[in-house]
Image (cartoon, rainbow, N blue to C red; front, side, top):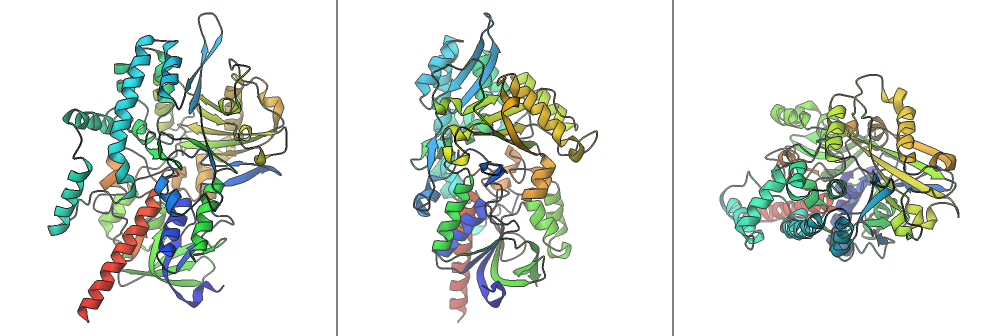
Amino acid sequence: MDVTSKVWDAIVVGAGHNGLTAAAYLAKAGRSVLVLEARPIVGGACVTEEVIPGHRVSFTSYIASMLMPTVIRDLDLGRHGLRMVACDPILTVPLGPNDAGEAEIIRWWADPARTAQEIARFSARDAEAFLDVERKLKALAAYLQPFFLESPPDLAARGLDRLREGLRMVRRFRRIKGTEIGEMVQFLTGSLGEFLDRHFESDAAKRMILANNVYGKHGGPYEPGSAVGLLFHLLAGGDDAVQGFNGHVMGGMGSVSGAIAAAARSFGAVIETSAPVGSIDVYQGRATGVTLIDGRQVRGRVVLSNADPKRTFLTLLAKADLPDDFRRDIAAIKMGGPAAKLNIALSGEPTVIGRASDATPLERALLTIAPTLEGAQRCADAARFGAVPDELWIDCVIPSLVDDSLCPPGHHMLTCFIQYLPYELREGTWDEKREALADAIIDQISRHMPNLRELILGRVMLTPLDLERIYGLTEGNIFHGDLHPGALFSMRPVPRWSQYRTPVEGLYLCGAGAHPGGGVTGAPGHNAAKQVLRDTKRQARTTQDRR
């Protein structure tokens, strides 16, 4: 259809999963919605693509861990093809040889008691500590859960709105105990390393819990705010709202985006791919639509940007359309990587040293090569100054063990997430170093999978620079801005502008740069759509009253 032939109620820039979620909710509410996506496929960084012909894998995001149950239900994503299989174990971490020279592996199971039994092999005290810590963390995460599907506290609210905000906070925390408030503050501001050193004695327990921290963060485990990842990963997710849920998505993560896109279309939304937006159009301080790279102008009553804050405000908008202080605040958001992905097609299943011969496919599908606490801090420090760490943090998933639709029979797919890499290298460029990085990753994995190299049929290395070029993630930041206490809740993307609105009237932010941040949750898209609906209803009432 000719998308320029009408004025849309809402135009969504970018068909990432959050943009699609926002579009689905707005279309479900009866609004005319157009989604414009630069790439030929929907999904943004939540996609399934081929490494070589017939061999597909989740190229960027790769495990569904915090997809909001409300979004799954509201959009009926199961009817649109979404199916997930719970990861169990949630994590598998190789520890190296024990005193007898045998390779050790520790696993974090969905059942806390079973995980405690694993830990007890290394420390009986740590096994008890784990059960106590997990119980407390799940309780704290439950207090945060409601905030993920609503706007954060509005620090700029005045009058009755300010009173309403205060009452909302009281309702959310009316049952919290004084001791829990202290623990919450510790988690939001403290360091993961200090927390683990205080509660656990064994390296095995510490490394297992470290491996479940937020992937994609800059800071090492001994930096303030690094403990918040444990709370994030204990939020409820999946169809059954299970705390700490992790799931393999059948068909890869692109099935999440595909299901949301199908839901949006079922409600009447129109999605145009290969339609890159060149600018967001503004007239007299209000967004009026967008101009595509090909010169076509599309008009809309509101515009929602699924792009990150820097791309939205510093690239798609003219400088004159924003206050200088706002632009400075946006420019100061920390991006800079720090992650990469390596996707590999294999002719068979690799052998893992130390893994039991009777391990189930679910057990064999995961392997997180995580350093010690001190090693992780050294990785973060090296990356901060433009160096590639000698020992990399590598999260490996073989999803074809759970989903045989991804590749031909007998073949397998391996997707690897690499943590703590610089966006800008101190020496050389990523175009020069891309394949060397892939070789280094494979070398390190081969210490645990000795037959890996001989199985490789093809590979695709995505550096932080590639994530920017291909997926539109400024400086390769998968979260649209770092996750730390100074950039969460009412501080995201910047103070005074955390309600999805922007200094441009009628322009909203609906991606991971808005509250509650990154991960495949659908929450920013859900919340932004709800904010648009509230604002448009309020404006309609005001117009009616004036008549």
